[in-house]
Length: 419
Image (cartoon, rainbow, N blue to C red; front, side):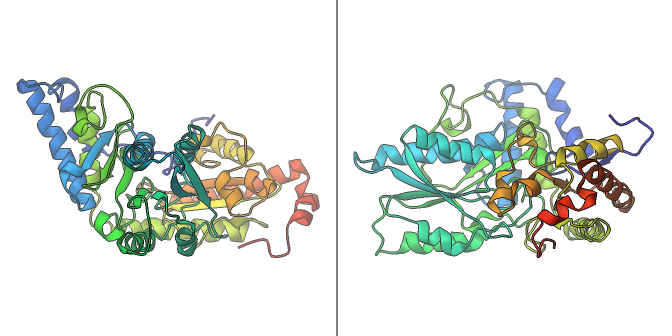
């Protein structure tokens, strides 16, 4: 929709990131030159296998675990499904009784792949699920996790950072609670409680050392940190019971059947190995994000930042502009060369209100008027300046069209609306 004469500004890094040039260079040989199947015994296969194991070590080094604890997958959705369904399937084999299902705890703001996986387990009669609420900043309260634990709880799955509002969850604190309960002789648990974390949005910005976090399973996806699409990984701590959920070959320690995506895996390994000494880059992104947030709230009346100002990823800004439809804002900005999102990319074709913003207590008008802007390492100050020039005009025009400029939208807002 951009006419080609306007700048092209990408503010949707939470949806995907461009492949880093160095990552692409590392991948290139494994498309046409070193094209062997990593499961083959001949030279070509051994060459591919060597590259896969190098990438496995690169991921393990980043997470602070052993290479044999890393399973390569096609994406975070597959990793999350394998974690949840695989643990339930494995524990059910050993502990399921005729009278009691196993119990899972998750949050109401998880990615749809986690929520839908939990719903599928409920529908199939394999587990009961507790969906924890969040506070107004989008944070899961540690106390609510502890209170939700029952004697048949076997798995807790909480995302590290939310994909829509960037809210950072108290993973380390939750991990300590789980460890304490697992070590307590007072609890009559049918199984150890395992802790899974969806760290897709966190990898680029937060400490993901699995020992520090106290997690048993952790999911990630390469295309969120300047790697290729179509490849992810799942950390499975040694001793964690996980059953395979798809039939086929015996690749990936007999847990994940299918021919390995060698170029993608090489790209994932290279991309994650380049996440180091990030302080200056993160500081720059945070400064630009804060300039964007402050500018929007100052220039656009009745605008609101959704989620916590402090406990959020440094690249994330999610706003509501009552009186202007979020989808209309997105399209108008696109015509001006600015790419943003109305929520998670996975839900962009869904017209229902954001389940994340709804969980924060926002009403339909606020949720439907929201847009997400996520910055990355290629974002510049001039990009932010351009957005702050264009966005206020777009919102003002759309409010006039909807009649909000005559006060209708303002009357609907509570007295304390704002940030």
